[in-house]
Image (cartoon, rainbow, N blue to C red; front, side, top):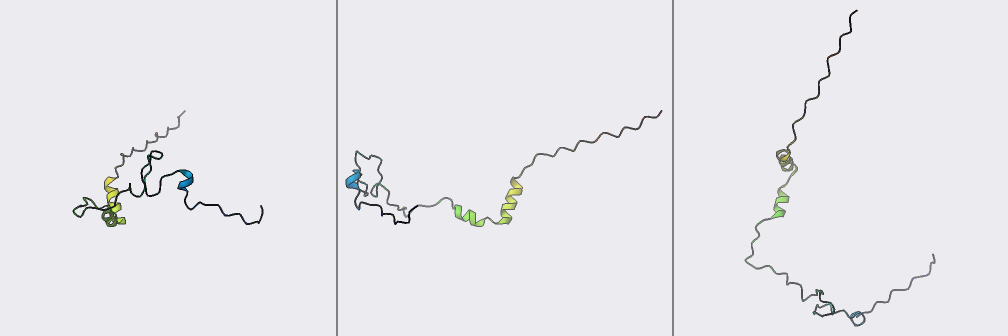
Length: 96
């Protein structure tokens, strides 16, 4: 490999002119109908009267190693163990 410095890539400051893409502001065009730009995205506002029904973060904060172990013991259901098979009684030696 050569130690010569590599040339910097040539980047156009305004590529829309070359690529014929719509502007990044997101105005719709027939050429790129699936384009989602800044104006096509929502405003990101939540109504003032919106109420959350659940709070997963609170549930996570309430979980401790003890509560997790208790839940695990409640939920853990193991099948009954089979008894180990009994070995046959040793055969008595034959008497002559």
